[in-house]
Image 1 (cartoon, rainbow, N blue to C red):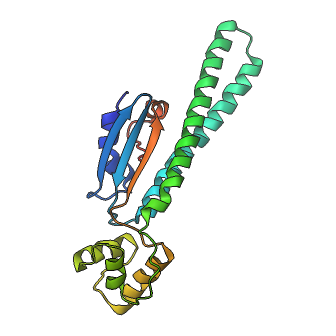
Image 2 (image 1 turned 120 degrees about the horizontal axis):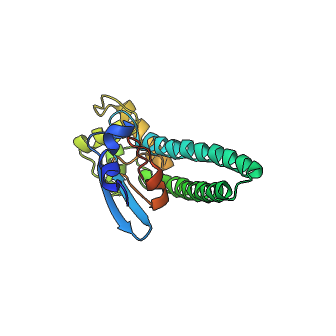
Image 3 (image 1 turned 90 degrees about the vertical axis):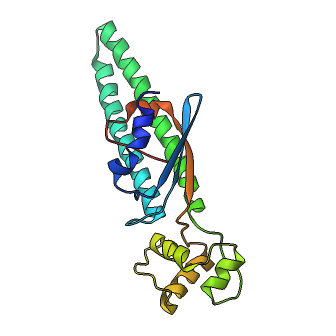
Amino acid sequence: MRNLKKIVCTALAALTIVSSSAAVGTAVQGSVFTNSITVEAASRTPLEVINGIIDDYQSMKKAYEAKLAIVNAELKNAKDPRIIEDLKREQAHCKEVIRALKETIASLKAQIPKIYFKKYTGNSNSLVDALKALKINNTMKYRKRIAAANGISNYSGTAAQNTKMLNLLKKGKLQNPDATIMVSVSSVIDEELPQGLIVLS
């Protein structure tokens, strides 16, 4: 699988949407590879990170849809058998890349719920108690990480900050800074990634 290791290793610098503390792992099985990314967002939340990744794939899909439209138009007017053969190969390739991208985008979207901590359904108005009930690390150090992942800067444990985090937890929308997202990606996408572009899962 061409340049797979290089593509994965250049992820943090290439997209600038994952913090330097993110961890990336890769496993290869048959014609697909599975990337996992543990996100501790410094300037972007885990949800923003994964949405940015999805946007990259969608942009790539649109580019291939446009390319396919051009190939289809050329195929209608082609007369030379060799040119027709080449265009049909290109047509099939574009369709395969588009199909793989659609599947990957759907797989990524299905992972979004895993970004959040389990919903808190208790009656406590204490963030620490709610975290304890869900067996989530409730130390100040970890709460700072949770706060940063949820767009709360300069967390110091104020009542307002804790209430905001608790309300998110009660809605099941408190983002986990250690969220791990995994998705299987067809090798055909890896073959088509331009140098310097990485779409992680």
